[in-house]
Length: 233
Image 1 (cartoon, rainbow, N blue to C red):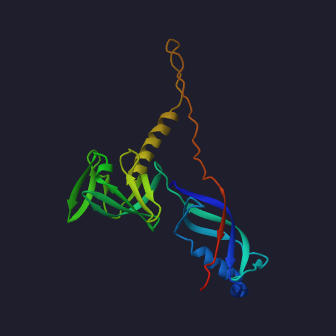
Image 2 (tube, one colour):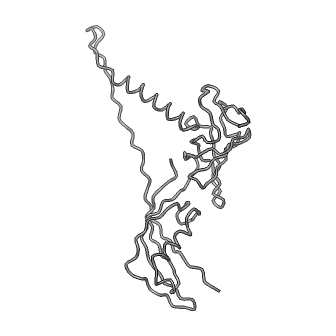
Image 3 (cartoon, rainbow, N blue to C red):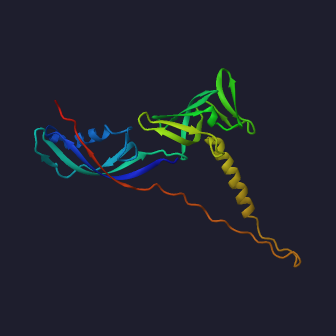
């Protein structure tokens, strides 16, 4: 699935002096408070972090409200969906006017009827709404189906995604993968056909081998982030 990347970040955490007795626990608490929220510094939602405990206890910054400043190097897993990216999620509700999806277990997505291609027709079966592909009756989208869809936009405050099923490479992941396997099998069968020597008049048949495609790995970007502890009144 697209939209996921590992980010190398230089962080600075500000803690209260009273937390110096258990600095590691205090740092993890501060970082955990950032999870599943959108951050402009990372241009996405922080899903997980991997950070090593600092060897020193940082330095105290003087002032009316003193803090301990601790510098950290961390690797962050960031979810940053952009328009035209392919995402995957689980369908939780199907209605005639929309399909509702949960992505990565925390972000909700909606696909309205105007963003569902015409080859899908809405039906009800045993009181349950579903979309059935007109040309492939096995291609069904209903509650519980894992689907692949295209991102149209995302609300950064609510983490709500608006998606589309217009492109042909979207829909039920199970059906899409079966279709891809069938296509690949036919390609292998054609390319593995042994060369046959024809008559001199016809010449010799030639078979061209195709190269493989390597998917782009997620980029590793560097970000700086300061995490400040709120002052107590």
